[in-house]
Image 1 (cartoon, rainbow, N blue to C red):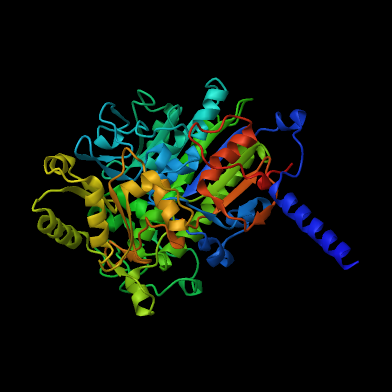
Image 2: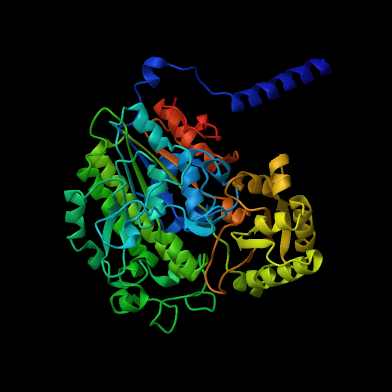
Length: 554
């Protein structure tokens, strides 16, 4: 009898595991092939840590984050699976369904070892700016090697389905929209305060964009920035004035309020809006205008609207993730999300669109603050390392200039000198690795030989591997200790493979999505395959993620 009970229990366990691992229903062509949304909206909140949802929950209204969480499917253990966690790679990975190893966007900027110069992920000298004469308009996705899910939708619909990309940052608009986008628009501040694009997409701004630029919307946000609620209720963040925040030029302290109009000229003109929650409000306004201007979601072919809220990143970099400014930015973003959802309900129709919300990376607590509460952290000086490494190599090999470049935590060899000296690249890698592992605040070191020949299962090692592009990356990758950064002693940054940088929100909402949540680990590269499966279109051509079937309503 005892053995019978054990067999029954084992059978139940296997059945439970099977039920968790396998889809819950069979494919129904009649229902599945005709249940696609009219519009897919991808929302990326720049530098949003997952815990901002839980931390600021009591300050949110019912129409933004709370609506998405209660009516959508919340993946609570979603992570980036690569290093470096920067804006360019983040946006590319979300929409291509793969990591920098495959899509090629290995940083915001990186050293091109073939042309011997730094390149920016979306700069394109072959095209012209549109809507401005400034170089800020010379952008395209030409360095992105793979397709995006929006590209695949365009191909699937014979280019009838539109794709519109929108963000304050050019890379936040260009990379998600992909190679075949109908248009991508980004905000040019300085003395213009206009939404612009490039000749990669069009020869002139559409009438609706010109009308928006002439409406005075940007000027309307040059007003005092005060907290939306009583600042004394913001108990989820640190003190208002402290030594861990950057602030604005022309203001003696980092306390509310901020008179943006009077601070404008000393802080980049209209660019000051980017570092306030009003930059997100301006983005939401422009996205809503695009719904009408481009007639998105108004015919039988699915359209794409990609929206990146960039101001959260600027505020985080300036004030730090524990600041009152960050908290107020998210409280206000919650209202902007509610406004966007309401516009989608009215213009596309509730139940006619599918939306996902995620982030391109997280952010670290300011190390200077962590030091005051006894948590290991610190700051790393790359210039000091470069000098000491070069001295070591000069002594070891009796030759200078064996290292051509150190950037993005990577070392690039000067192969002309290495070959001239008949030095084995493997020997050089090993000597450098041995030197670096003795260096304070360096946690791990990976060589090109390791990354090209081995596979990794451990988290950080696997993340380095997923971020290593054989053609574009360097010869040695350096990993710093947790909460050790190369940055000013004020404000937060990102880029590591630690949880504060990798744990990002992921919520699916709307047509075809059920209400629920899961603590199963998911990865950022799973988003594009999930949307592809929902639409019944091909996965992006380099996708390595998996469809998250648990979010589907049927």
